[in-house]
Amino acid sequence: MFDKLKTMQALGSLMKNKEQLAEAGERIKAKIEAMRVEGEAGGGACRAVVNGKMKLLDLTLDPALLAGMAVDEKTRDLATSLIKDAINDATQRAQQQVQDLISREAEELGLGDIGGQLGGFLN
Image (cartoon, rainbow, N blue to C red; front, side):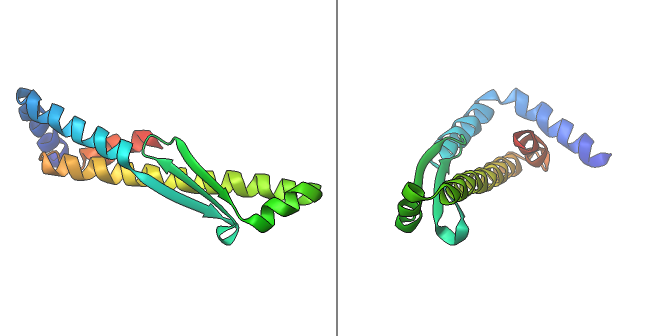
């Protein structure tokens, strides 16, 4: 209960200093846009890279997997599954990094664990 009270007091004082809050928001936005997070599936046969906005930036498939896709329906199904898994892995890792970033910024602003609470909206 006292932690919530401290957080509310910190938010109140922070609202008085809107410039500090705006600067923190800009820092977070820039770091999220610059973030590059890789995920993989199939022991690295498929790799995906997303940014902090969860936008897919790159997708790489192992050449052997690509060759198999041209001839075999089963391999195409496997590739589809690996692509989904790699993208989901990258997205999950990126969400965690964004949440960690928000938590660190909140700590620096004296807001305690509110960053973790705010970051939870990403999931």
